[in-house]
Every structure is written in C-alpha cells, then in structure tokens.
Image (cartoon, rainbow, N blue to C red; front, top):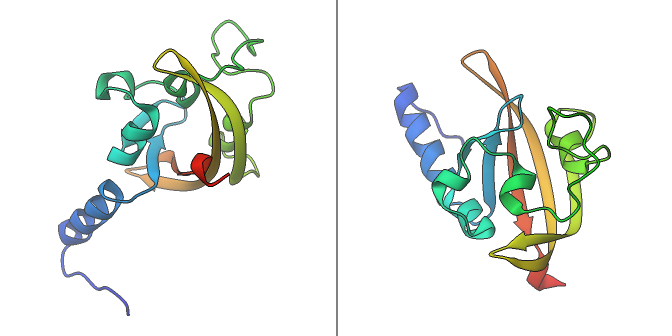
Length: 138
C-alpha cells in the first residue's frame, strides 16, 4: 500500500505522529552534533528533562563514561568516539554500542543498536538517529 497526500502539511503531520509515538528512541542532530529534535522514547531512554536534551550532544545527554581525551579544546567528543563517526556522516551508518553511562548518578551498562540516516531539510543537513535499546534482551 502506498500513501499519497494532497498537501504537504498532511504528510508532515503523519510523519511527526509516527516519530513521536515510535517505540524506539529517535533524535535529530545538526552538523555540530547538537540534538534539535527527539521523541518521547529518547527522553525516556535518557531519563532527562527536555532542557537537558535540546542543544546538547548525545554523549553529554547519556553521560558517557568514556568521555575524555578530547580532539581539541573546542570539542567534547573523544578522539576515537564511535558516535562521532556515526553522526559525522562517515561511511558508518549503523553501530552496536555496549557502554557504561551515568544515568541519574548511577552507572548503567546499555546495549544499544543505533542507525543513522542523512536528512536534508530547508537546505540544512541533519542526521536522524534511531536507537533500539537492547539492554534487557541480553
């Protein structure tokens, strides 16, 4: 079955509803790796308030325990960060990340399967990231 819309606002409305109610965590990041949009599942995964998510980087939001050894003083990503490679648009579009994170002042080991997709909106390039939290499946 193929959906066809007469107006762009109908398609946008449906797309926004699908993303917002999707069971997997979804966020959109810009070229500076700052989160510009996220769904309820992402907020639940990170256990963060909206203000602690928007305009922040994924590793900062998640409380990555491997942060350190920065590329330079202006960068908050680690030298060999797999998330940075994924979000930068390199050849990497899928990532399995098993890592400890600080969530609510506790160290939690997460098993995340992450897919990233290039998106262009209004001439700006973004990465749409979908996270399947497989922590409890292992």
